[in-house]
Length: 415
Image (tube, rainbow, N blue to C red; front, side, top):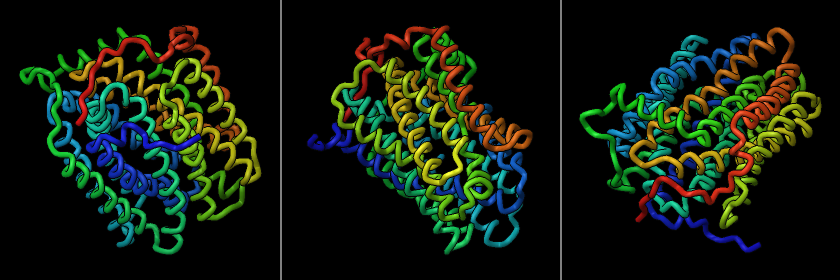
């Protein structure tokens, strides 16, 4: 099959944003996995790793709905300037605390929570901006390329984090991440002003505008069911927080191997996203989406049962590939079925599910691992993921027949 330039990258403004995200995500992923390792060096209690999830999700729950209203009421590009700059300063602070030897678990939790506040405002603005940069026909490809950027960064980041910690110290990762945010800031400067439809100014960031977004989701079963399925799958089958324990105690490997193990999911995800990016028109999206969730849960079970580094790495790569396909399809469904003036609020509600699943899942995994061991926590989570999917489909069977060519509610603009 001859490779071609993905159509979304032919739109100049989206290309700038995509390239900036590719660099920034690599830095962010370096920091995420480095924090897990950092905590493991401070304490060997699994519940301490679960605390990171709690620190991340509480700000998202509190601020996401407000962030969605902000994204629909104010210029999304300018919102991203503020969130990216804030995240850079927080990463810099984390590096300074570590280098000066003043870092504690509570410093890590507090700074992680502050960065989650920035994410709560950044996510809705960034995702809602994409349909303003490409036409509707190229939107699935744009989300495929966004997923590719995320997963490529998720390969480079964790893989480099092990080397950065080994040769530059723990603080080196945090400094690199702080610098990586400059790539998105530069991209936003090059993009220039972007037209968007906004909520009525007199109702900006009010309970009325937030409620409008909630009512919209509740009246769109195809969107609501994908959000719930996303939450259930990632809540039960999120094994990331236990990775240091698996690496050290089960697989008996060091920090460099831990970095490669952490990158395994993203290797599979990149391969899957590359395949999808070459598909001109993706049909039978509902069945493919559901099938990817089943594969995700089954591969999680295999990972939990494995005692071999190669088997564990391979199982994680399969979970990444399945999750990549799932992410591309569910993002396409949500954005195409949502009008532009309410996209930020829809995304903010989705962010609670999308962030809440894995972050609360980290807490759940930490508790179960504390009581029954890490392998049991991972295996039981994979089984619960598949059972949860079956219950969601039984309640909302529309996903079984969703094809992907249903009428789209929202138009988009492009240069």
